[in-house]
Length: 333
Image (tube, rainbow, N blue to C red; front, side, top):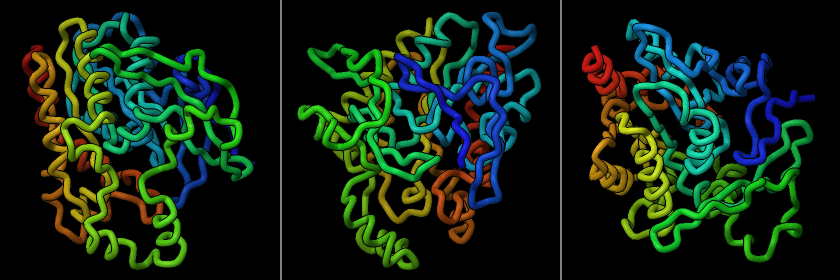
């Protein structure tokens, strides 16, 4: 039986269980989830005051930041920390969350602590999670599907209104979902039936099919007026405005479709560039560094079945972020 690694949180939905050390089965042979007393996969215990002579980054994201598939030391945040003497990275990544929940983590756990740089690394798929009120999940223990409630924002008259807090406990069947929420369920992407057929019967040809059809897993970025993007953009700008004047580095993490160039990424790049109109936001496009890898090596950045970053992929992502981090660290000296 798989071990439980999360616990309920009334505002976020859930966090990792504090002080946890668990070995998780994985196609690469398994990895260790180790959490601090706050309930995050962070190698540091979070203190209100940062240590002397330290440049501290508060890092946020989903499973790509928390590090699904790899040990703590192999994640891009930990790789960056090793590269810069005096750098401390506090990893508040939480698997399965959207940017909205990550913003709530900041408000609940981080807003009052001392840090130098707010670093937000949303996996670009998060745009679907931000729009969702429920997520389709599979029980780790029983392998059964169900629907998990999450907090969500609505953008009304340019203001963000928070809903579904406290978050309803437990897992729901589709019949148990409120009627008004039936169209706000994240099932893992568009064209669910087609994806299931390809994954079941045509998996060896999956990359060829995606490339030939120019399948775009996140089409919401292609339209600057798309309501999902407008909501995500509003959350990121509101978050940056609450950083206390500290710099904000936003670095979207691309999906493998964009790294391997089976899907165009122009819309994604253009949308995130819009955020630089905010005075303290700097956006890093990580794709060019991935594209520097030879075509045959780009697939090494993800696992064969699991789309998460391999240790090699985390190294490449750290390479992409290092110049910007270096500028901030050097400027603080």
